[in-house]
Image (tube, rainbow, N blue to C red; front, side):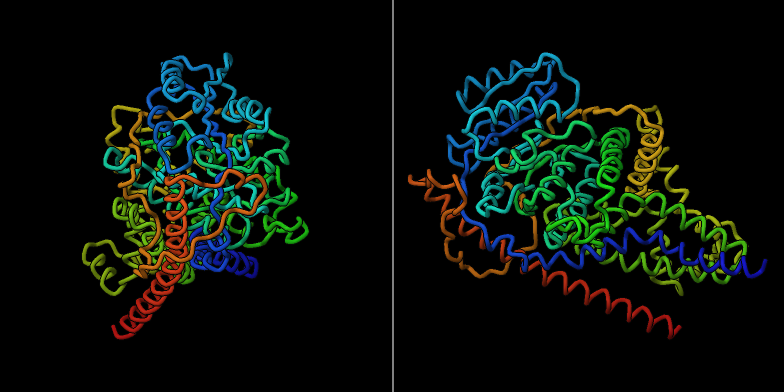
Length: 581
């Protein structure tokens, strides 16, 4: 029996560290971010201005459509090469009136496609428009966007420049939370999350050669890519954008993320709205995981794509399984607490040292990847794990200061402490999720004022983990799929030429725009090459901005190296200080 308990303790000791796996995997991803400069993402582009059909699914979007469409038409893309098709999904508000006004103001550039029977979901709505667009040969590329997003002036050509390479089938932009000063604490959390999940993680995916998801609000496809997919988007899952991304790469086309092609989007500003949105996303990810079950960790056996690589699979499952890993880690600590106090205390300290290093690296590099967003959401970045977890991180960073202080307060936190705080600390990774669920529930009651403090306490990540766990339960139960839309109010403002939306570290002040790349060599992309003065300005701007993107990628690599050195030095100084106490 003693042998069995000893073996169980050894297994539990290992399971404790599974709670840190999502953060460790994030670190592994972030270590690759700066290497994007060596993948030639911006070195092999050319000015490519295909005739582009824009598909906008719209269901009761009168409040946001005009800003989105007018901003897009005013962007730095040649007139006559953009046609916007708005698929009105049986709207019952003033959407038809707004579209009639826009179509009259921009004849031929804005087309209203009406569906009299709607509510089937975004993919059905898009397919209605896609059939119309592909019925003739005008469109050489198709841009899918949401009704509420606002494109920065250069975003369209920053995306289309990648189609100059014939192997590229799809391009996705960087979605930034765009509420700005109209937002609140939750939209700032989302803004920071999007730095980590998009601006950083998708750069890593560029390095790996396997992109997980085309952003639903800003994805560009070559016509050839869409035709290879059968001319329609998936309607069987809640993650049609992810299915499209996987199928494009399995069909032999590259998918590229452009971190400097910026799109502003309005995101939910309360926990209940965010829960509805992320519940749909999480269920979609579980469906995708099952759909491609023969793909994971298969290496080159899946073809020339990298979707089957071990690192990509680890990245995918570390996010998908986060709530289960947190529960397993907490359960293991509690088991050790009652059977081997010394080992449980050592495991707890080691776990939070790993968390501390991961937290410092991910946070500092995220703020360097997108300094514009960082200036707005740095407070939320610092307390992203939650105030309780930050408390544990502080104790881990300076234990010889924090632990005696807790002792003097009667809250001893040591391996011999009988105080309930010890058990609470061990249970925290499990407790934070039901508390996050409570924050979601409070958001729609008279006690909604408690929701924000509770989210700060447990952490935004715990809210996402609780939502993922709820989605898993719904998926196992076979609950009915819901394509419920997120209500938008028009908080995003147009990004004019003077708007500061640039993501990425400041580039070195070389003052050299670099040589102008030649025109695109891809088929059907340059037969109508720029000729007038305005298009000449675009050519010069393309050369200067593309060179600037290359410089920012180089700068990001130096930022990454500097942050790594800083953290190593901090940890060495911490150990020297602890030894000297």
